[in-house]
Image 1 (tube, rainbow, N blue to C red):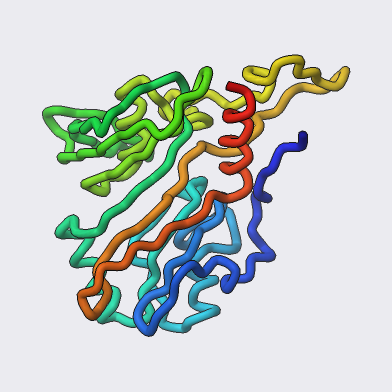
Image 2: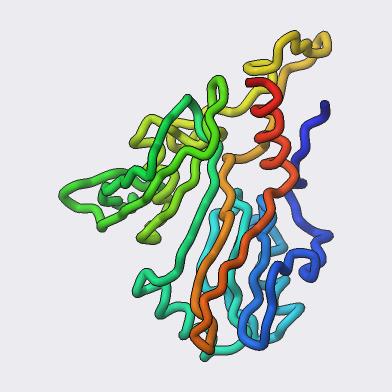
Length: 246
């Protein structure tokens, strides 16, 4: 079976294909992996630029890490932007992430409450004395032979919060080498796996296995909206392999 990955440079994306929900105030999209939310000095394409090519006054309301896929909200006008930002600040937005992690874990709606300190090198660490409050709920959705599929519900929105909170629980996200995750090799789970002579096995998934699965918020009329983002091809293929090779 061939690996399913996204190209490193997202040059041929049609923004319309990303749209999950749209009304007169908001656009919610399923952000592909390897696409920056905002301007990136390395990559010429970013989500904000694509959104403004579709809607001139578009403004992203929050961010996802470049390698993270999933649902992301975009405001069509300043009033909508302020409306949703106030909900983020008051923690009224419901966020659900799915992550494939290393190891077998049985989290039963477990709260991780560990303050996070942002470092100068762009990573974070847990600091009880200097960190800002951070809380994440963890629930195991599926357990496999050497991995687990975890639902993560962050209460706060600190940088790399889910990544370091899972690492703190010895459940680093698969492929997240910054916080202790290991690349996923198909040979590690697939019985009888054979590599072509003279070749070196590459990771099955070219990024960390983290996906923003759903976003719940109040629209401009006060109605509660929930928008879910289907898994992208690489994440879906990874989960499928884990299910087939339990």
